[in-house]
Amino acid sequence: MPANYHTHTPLCRHAEGEPEAYVDAAIAAGHTEYGISDHAPQVPEPYDDWRMLESELPEYLRWIERARAHAAGRIPIRCGLECDWLQNCEPWISDLASRHEWDYLIGSVHYLEDWDFDNPKWLGSRWAESDVEEVWTRYWKTYTDMVESGLFDILGHPDLVKKFAHRPAGDLTRFYEPVIDAIAASGSVIELNTAGWHKPCDEAYPAPGFLELACSAGIPLVISSDAHTPAEVGRDFPRAIALAKAAGYRETQLFEKRKRRSEPLP
Ligand SMILES: [Zn+2]
Ligand SMILES: [Zn+2]
Image 1 (cartoon, rainbow, N blue to C red):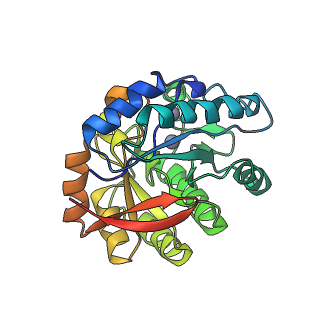
Image 2 (cartoon, helix red, strand yellow):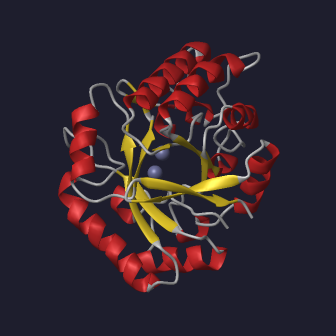
């Protein structure tokens, strides 16, 4: 099984499980490498209730050390963060990048200005009042800004905006093409994130059509489960591998100290 780099810890307040249990699950799933990338701190604090605090970064690194000690060479343990792309966040991301010798940083868009649109608490209010076409337009503009920042090794769950099955009418390629051009120019890697199969959208992130365009554009790929419990660690990897191959992919990517190399898909 390919490496699995997008996974969480209880420090984000909405994941559970001990490091030993996550590592055991990664070994059982047969991943070549296991990476931890919890929701990064965000200033000003408290920014929201679904991430670690800045003061918890040392505890986060100790959690990863526990995972590495338990793995004891049986599987490489990589160390990352899932960072939020926000307006004017560049200095903060650079600051976070300097705090540790990370193996990779994932960039994710969970916010459109002050709205964490993937939080189910907004389903009856802000989502209900929103024009889906307009939200998608803002989302992809924001995502493209993140890509063009060049601050991230891996671009997280590319079409997360569809999480609750809000999709504009018609062919969605019009949203995909500009961002794919930007990703190809940036040299960044996208993830195929299996969590979407367990959300109302009932589709991995990104959609198959996006994945095919990305492969044609030469954009490299990682596969990740976005696990928030040990039971979710290897979830849907065979299905994701089949999807990646159908889109034309033959390899995925490995990261160490922010350097990338490839491994063939099984
Ligand atoms: Zn999370
Ligand atoms: Zn995320």
